[in-house]
Image 1: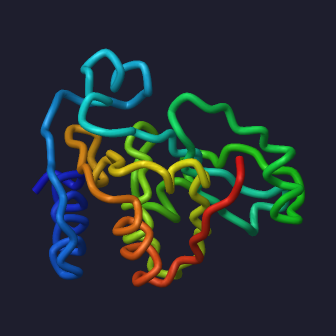
Image 2: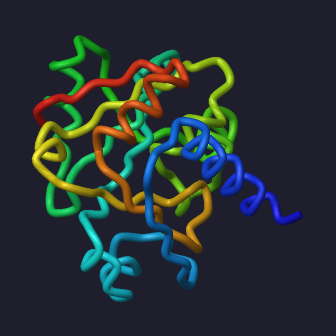
Image 3: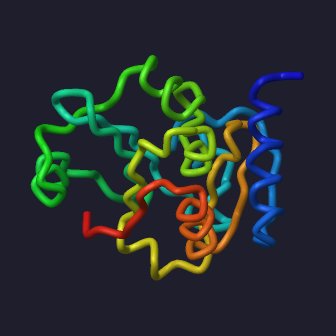
Length: 166
């Protein structure tokens, strides 16, 4: 089986296990926000940006999920977290911690984080939205669900998760 499809199935099973309602939309691969916009996927709900970050020492790994129309000030986020300088994690860290490749980063990838080492930070502005769309570990589909349910899923998995002002 295609590894991305296996990871997709695992994410969908986790949603079903917690009885989380969702809609899924299959589409051509969408690895960037520009590709997502070109397909009109945002008409179904907000599709946030997912930034996989690490601190200067590489000990702290953070998945920052922000509104698509925002830019993250990584210095301000680092200060808010009382962390050393934050930067984008490399491909090896992405695969090691989240089990996905660039272009498929998603909050659902924390289900692949067996050590629950990745902190998930949601932009506080996302709380005001009805639904968000995230890849189910495969950038050929988007799952639309309530942000509170996504938060509950991550929390039940055991990863640290919270909302912050970005």
